[in-house]
Image (cartoon, rainbow, N blue to C red):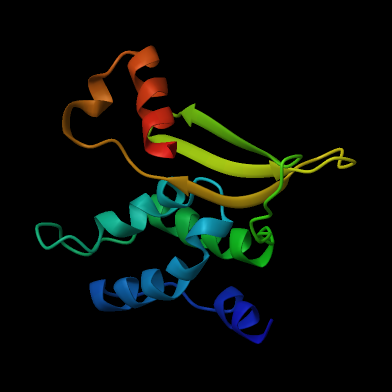
Length: 143
């Protein structure tokens, strides 16, 4: 919990190097936070070589949101095996990229247990895909 409190108390980065360091620290929680890559996307944009470092409202909001998500991160469960255990893959094609999560549900459980959350931004022409193609992409990435 100590590291989580330290992250929650962090001040916003003031340059590219500090932003990269922050992203390295919070990257550990990527599987615990739904839509992680979509949340931190504005932070990655300011680290690109072709971009000057410009900290605006979008970066500030992403910085605060990812810190809040880490404080409330979901505890992932270990994979269980057995004939009665069902694995369920949930996918979604968001406006900014595909997301998917893997859950397990055992007999007697009313709600499944999360095994992980993943997301990424669209690459190249993927942003121009139809909604159905984006859903298929999310399912493909999940499998």
